[in-house]
Every structure is written in C-alpha cells, then in structure tokens.
Image 1 (cartoon, rainbow, N blue to C red):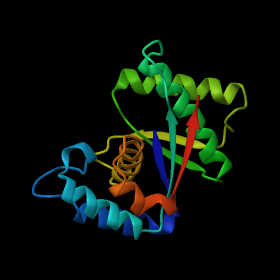
Image 2: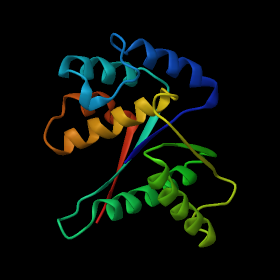
Image 3: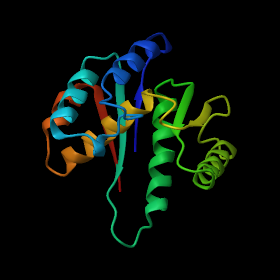
Length: 166
C-alpha cells in the first residue's frame, strides 16, 4: 500500500501533469492497465514532480488473509504519514462496505491513540482525484521492483521510502 506526499501548493501542478498522461478516453491512469512504455513515461514524469512516496509492504503466506494484510499496511501507512507531518490523507475508495472497514480501523487507531484525532482522513474515487493515480503508480512500481522489474522503481527510488512489515 502506498501514498504520495506533497505540499498543497503543488496539488494543481501534479493533477495537471497526471491528467496529461491519460491516453485516449481513459477516465484515469491505472498502472496495470498501461503499456510498459507508458509506465516508463509515468515513472519519468513522477520523478520530476515535487512528491515523495511511502510504500508499506507486508510479505505474507497463504495463512494470512488479504484483508488482514491490507489492514496492517494501512495502519502502518497512516502512522508513517502522521509522523511525516501529513495532516490530510485521501484514501482511494474501494466500495462502501470496504471503506466502512477502513473507517472502523481508523476509529480503533484513534481510540488507541495510534493516530491523532486531528489527522483528517477521507475517501475518494480515483476517477475524481488524479493524485491517487500517483500513489497507485508509486506502489505498483515498488511491488514490481520487489518482483524483479527495476525499470520503474529505479527512476523513483530517491523519492520513495519502503517500509517492510513482517
């Protein structure tokens, strides 16, 4: 699971750049839907933007449920973002039911004081927020790097911090 961090003054520049990378009538950029050549262009453009990335990875076996792994990554990501001074977090909406699970986790993290109550967290569709496309690209480039394809991550390595959970 990954995030990009940027100053609010750069939001519009980043959005315009990402929107310019959409091909044809595609409503959004999505890493797995792009060609390898276009993924390279996306990584090159991201490398030139005033962003940093945080990616949390959990290596797990078949005994761990995917949603459990996601919750662990989401918790760590929120902690990392808060420690970096991020005050507003926008999470890509998955579905009302799954967003509710995320909200319940957030509530539990706030009750346990793992996450401060003043950190604003909201959910948006990726079609509505191009900055979420950058987070998808950073997380995907990282996981592809972990699978042995370095082309994209190598361009972003100076901007991305990878946190591994066990």
